[in-house]
Amino acid sequence: MCSDLQRRRLLQGAAAAAGLAATGWALAAEPWAGNTLRIVVPLAPGGSADAMCRLVGNALGRVLGTTVIVENKPGAGGVTGLAEVVKARPDGSTLGYSLAGALTVAPHIARHMPFDPLKDLAAVTQVVAVPEVLVVHPKTGVRSLGALVAKAKAAPGQLNFGSAGNATVPHLGGELLKREAGIDLVHVPYKGSGPALNDLLAGQVDLMVADVTLVRPHIAAGRLLALAVAGPARLAELPDVPTTAQAGLPGLAISNWHGMVAPAGTPPELLARLQQAVAEALKAPEVAARLDQEGADPVASTPAQFAAFLRGESARSAALVKALGIRWE
Image (cartoon, rainbow, N blue to C red; front, side):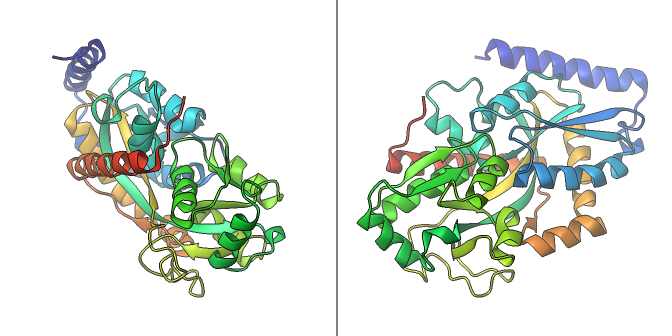
């Protein structure tokens, strides 16, 4: 049976499709021309999602012939902003740009989730895949993952790790580090990776599992130290940084990604056009150069591919959350 929200989405979707036909908008003729496309980033300014959305959004506006407005709506690890997208009209005028946490992690951690990402949001595309890196502030005095673990074991509960908020990938990464290394760290959640990075750079936070796109410039400048890449292979951008497996913690493996979603009930034709436009935007010279420089991989999957990916990621997150025993009030 359909919920009230799902029934409303179906009706709104039908109305949106009828409206497109009534106005004679042809999808191939750029239906957003002369209109505004609003993209909600459910995290604070200054983070990796915010920066990437604005970069891709500028190119997307050119592709669609429209003005793209990016709005930051932080809160609850990204859930607050996406809840606003869920309530928007499914006519292609409002989208959400989210990291993995709010879409596939939060439903398995939060005790009170205001929506079901797999039912109340429509997949548009996975935009990029982003490797995670374990970084520390130089004041910690450690230069390797082994040294960090030794220091944490010698002083339980004295080191802390920042995250973009509860139920985000950096949060999971920190909890996974605690379990795999057998150490006690204090979690400090923020309303986005930007504020968390600011406190990490200021030395108020000791360490963080973070998107390489967020921390690579600060690693290059010596403001942060990279201890390990939480993935299967070293990164070309950080050739001297070992993987977590090479550093002795093969179980510390986690990655992040950015995806674009729309309200459920958005006509499939609009979703397909948006995906095609994002794919084209990712090929823009300034976007491609920035992705290559910062270590993010463009994806631009179809709506069907991204929907299947979300289901798989949600299942994997559920298993990891259960194993870690994390709950969020």
